[in-house]
Length: 330
Picture 1 (tube, one colour):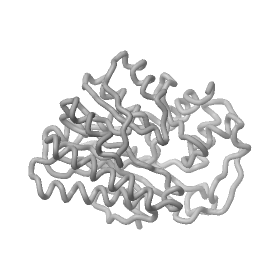
Picture 2 (tube, helix red, strand yellow):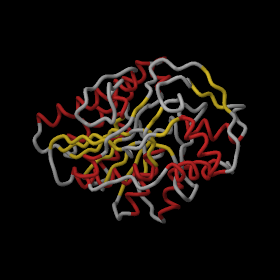
Picture 3 (cartoon, one colour):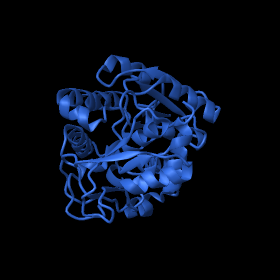
Picture 4 (cartoon, helix red, strand yellow):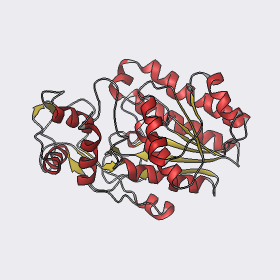
């Protein structure tokens, strides 16, 4: 049985669907800090399969204990954690407490119940401000905000655990920019409060919830002046976790993989493609650059392609169409 922490979240819910559809048995937990029980019900509806689910919190060991006590867990896919960059700058201690200390709590329970396989939801922000692109897994690491630093700390903790226990198996998955939603429209990115990421802000602008979209900077050294990112469909990302799970079940030690498409799109590319495929206007205003934003972040996903047998299949039109399909009637 596979434990999915943070199952009700954006990537957790899509991965749960992929796991169940591939024939895996799962158990999940979430504290619903930035998610909803609706996502858990949607996963069950989409797959036609039931699974044990617990309300539990990384910072409360005893709330997680029944998950391990009542289920025979063979591996963990670890999504649970706080993830808003701006919030991490404002509340760094909350991020260190939840993400880092919480993961230590999870690992202590894994040790106690002899669970030695984990795929960790990391981020491309651990590369800081790379001097060149595309980015390969051996690039230097740095962090420009507390959120990224928590991911780097956790990566280091997992590496240290592997050094002390030769039976332990870890895959670190460094995501680039997940967007899109399940084709059913039942699950997608639905953050509580004001969204931080670009696609939810585009969707809220298209719905009229926001008067206009803020484009942070159009004077970057890129073809149209806006920042370029490697956007990946969340369903492709979910399938990457299935491939990673196969890897940790057949290997030991630490493996690191970029999960991206290797193709870069600008902010304007995203806005114009969204408008075109969904036939809806997205008004925007240009403001000065945000501190810490880099001109281009682009992955080299060759290692994941070669070693995991995984490749992103969906294009930008799929990402834009499915994102709108998820939110348009809500």
